[in-house]
Length: 358
Image 1: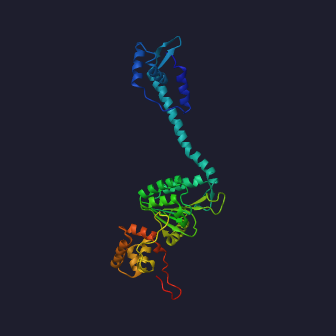
Image 2 (image 1 turned 60 degrees about the vertical axis):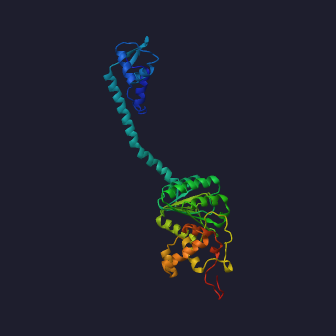
């Protein structure tokens, strides 16, 4: 009985090292060729080449160096035992590798953790803009309830706008409530305006504020991203990833305070003068403006009625009148029209002197 050729021996060495590929079963063609070899029938070296390779890999045939065109059949039981031993060695090597994985990752984690800047247990410094963006994308991708964004700059390029819009559309489709705050100067940006117009139609809310504010992103009130004011290694790009629930709650409250002072925006660059204005250039009453301001802030009509000391029926009549006045078919459209109206800028605060107000 001859010995397997050198290639089969090489396969054994590879298997013993644990680096061989997964074993494959013999093809039907290889089984048929093996039968012909045992019966000393004709073997076509071209048509049967692939089948002979399979048989050689399994240790089922070998060749006489003096008669390479006449393959010799080997004992299948012996070949099977050797093949089984090879597979068991491979399995043992893979099991040993799997057992070492936790140890290796723990060792690498020590280096990774030492490389981080941390402020307490709940904050991590992110110094590179690519890392900041990747971490925010990952967090927003897992948002389930709410996304609050205070962005003084807004989307800077069409490419950035498309990336943010795709991300936020996916969040809205999952039922995430999105609110975004921009500086008032953002109303003059065509890129930002196009993004706001597109996302407003999908249910997101936007407001602008004249005074400067800090940049932040709050996800589900469980984690937040804020600009760096400690390390200052990369001004404008570095951020802190905050997970401390108390700190995140404080950041969210700062956002809410800015949101309450900001003006609604649906993407239009500026508002025009109201049509059909009444005496003094106004079309709405003080009561109606109070109702509209609460609607823009998302306050329930029941709470607005209680605050103003009127019944829900009276409030509904006022809202109906306002819808006709602004030509709005829905409450959402009424809110947008109010955001575009110059009347939202009327100062209804009580005067400090005896001067009458509009």
